[in-house]
Length: 477
Image 1 (spheres, rainbow, N blue to C red):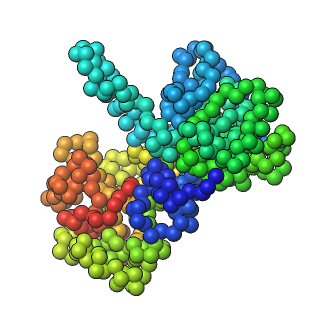
Image 2 (cartoon, rainbow, N blue to C red):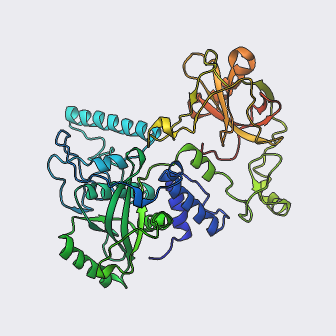
Image 3 (cartoon, rainbow, N blue to C red):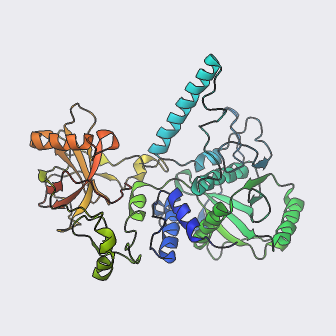
């Protein structure tokens, strides 16, 4: 299969939540690296280091129907429910795929949006029943569209594979929607069990195109002879197939050299790899992969920003001077802004000595929220947080506490969350109210609950913050 085009790479990154401008000057190698890193993070491999030897892992108990569970739809296509793209046997009556459940991944934002869509669907259905009018025109908004978002399609395909394996399936095809150009042949060798009930799939695979299609058909014939008729044919766009192949290539090193693989006659050119459950990127990786998008002129790694507006990044003075004619129209000086000095604390009143866990809309429930938190920490007002920024300006997020009206506190943190601090109304009521008003105004946004501002560290617990200048740079955290 042909490699990703540059446009496809940017589309994949966008589907992962990593936004680069279409005209980004980042090199192809740098973009490729972001995709590789994102695929590692979306399998949460950083929480499994060191990765265990596959030879030491116990097998997953497959095909355990739970007759007490209601029958669930079989995910045999890249959508979340069966449809015209699915070619598969139906789920046996009463079968509930525990393996598929173990592969479910999501975060707080997705859970909230799913609940919103379900509630909206229910209201629209009730409206249709009462008035005979269907505002949605037959659309099920609880089901994400297929073949639109490559990463969401990949996640649904992983669930399909899990459901298929749990029913005893051994071999399958991933094919383009027209079933004419591209396919990936897959044989599931085993499903093993990592810690805390996390499955790892071991498989043989090979991609095919129109030139090699006959070899792929020969394999399918042998598989049907050995294992019986194929149970599933998952339709995947070429971009999704490329993404899945890249994930498998990146995981190949997790298979030990002494891992025993019994190959059939038609599998001599097949590769062995593994994959893990796939889910949305968490806060840390998302912030990291959205930072340093490269010099706006040449795409090389940046070392400085425009000193006036802080929104344009450069690799050096040569590119900065070259960009000035284009940049000056958008450049807005921070010098005329109003800078306010505030004093912060590490914890909320009454919670001194306790522990805190950092959860936001990107927090995943994979492996349990408690384990996710390297984010769990114990605030200490006697020890100032590290100063990773020195004397440089940097962006902070400020968001109000929603437990009181009017708000009595604000939380502050930077992109890397090198610190998380609190500022209280009682420390400086007038200035605090000005910041609240700014959040609620046109330069705030986000429902008046948060805003981003440029800041500078002026003391262990003090920050100078530009109140009335909205950053021009995009924020993704």
